[in-house]
Image 1 (tube, helix red, strand yellow):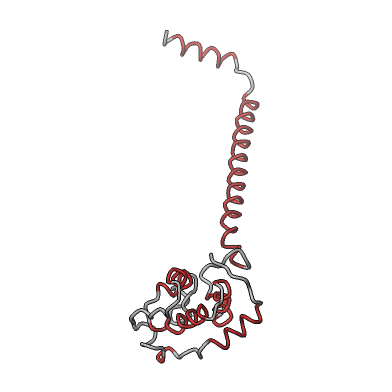
Image 2 (cartoon, one colour):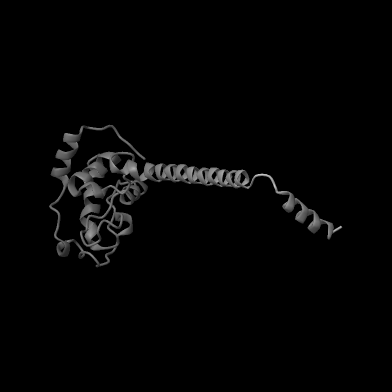
Length: 181
């Protein structure tokens, strides 16, 4: 991830507000809105295309009809044009990648960040499966151990209840074994 020196959150927000055009209504978006495929937005001169693509992949389209399901890179619809223009203007203004993503979050909410990272609820997305696996393994191990102990105890209990064989049982076993000799 590319980073540039931070200019302070207040300065970034102020710059974002000054540079950002009013958010256009869905049908008023240049080239159409949601569900209307448009030609790719031309890239302003002087913008690193790889950097722009990386930013598009790390910002989610704010179209309410998509329910935050596509990144800007994956959204071919006209509804993504205003956000893509905001990002290009921010690059031209000299903002760093983190500042641009923070600007998008400030304008469109926390869902605009494609990578939740290791902060807030996003940390749970990384740690919850590991914790769940640990707890499940511990419960499974305890259950197996319990079954093992219960089985051993039951066998020992049966042996203790049976005690020694009677003389009649010994005679019957010897009689049965002698048939096989």
